[in-house]
Image 1 (spheres, rainbow, N blue to C red):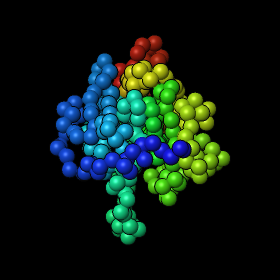
Image 2 (cartoon, helix red, strand yellow):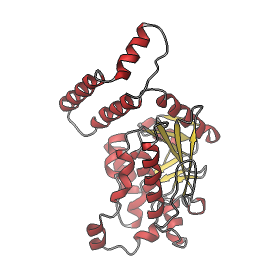
Image 3 (spheres, rainbow, N blue to C red):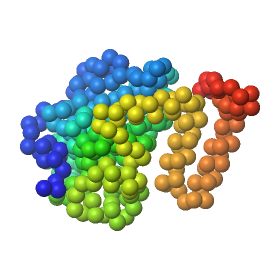
Image 4 (cartoon, rainbow, N blue to C red):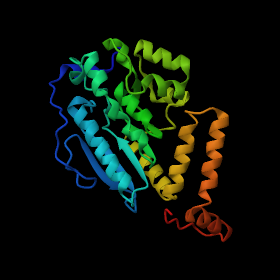
Length: 288
């Protein structure tokens, strides 16, 4: 069946996920639905692993709440320059928790802003890399697309199968997927619920690189380390400018880029970077 395995699994399994959890902090891993750590030689990479393996990392409210808390903690951590988000080898995240949605009414969704806290990751200034192994279906695909870079394992599969449950994507699936892969493929995926492989996702521009399953997370951390070695404030400006390309006309986007480019000349790191280049030495950025 083309239906997302994770969505089906989430529908059939007991509803054991709630938004109550013990306070946790990256490095301490006191969370219930995620595991956090700091990686890299200088511990400058924040790692968040979705950890509901029996439910194929179905995205329940509690998991999203914990994810947002971990993202905030890494955002505030001056040592962290980039973040890697991953799941397990079988599933990155196999969809939203359907048990939580099953009895929702329009009035409930509208009045509470249902799923409105899912896109917190898009407001994080530090670059976020999704390391996707296995299923990234429905909400899992949407979560990956909210990240800045997607690396995929060789066996990864992406899909928006909400149509098979009598609904449509509700966390950016119709919007981000279309911008990433174009109208025809996005429309096909959304209207059929069919999955695409990691190779097809790379050909379509949804992911940037593919790695063997067992090497994926290490490669994502390696990329994050490279990003984290640059100036955090300049990286944030670069991220803002690239993201603006999806929101603005070319003319307005170029205007913003120019303003941000000019803004780098007010930073110590821009001066240090160019001075180091002229002096043929490695730059020592201070994030100032």
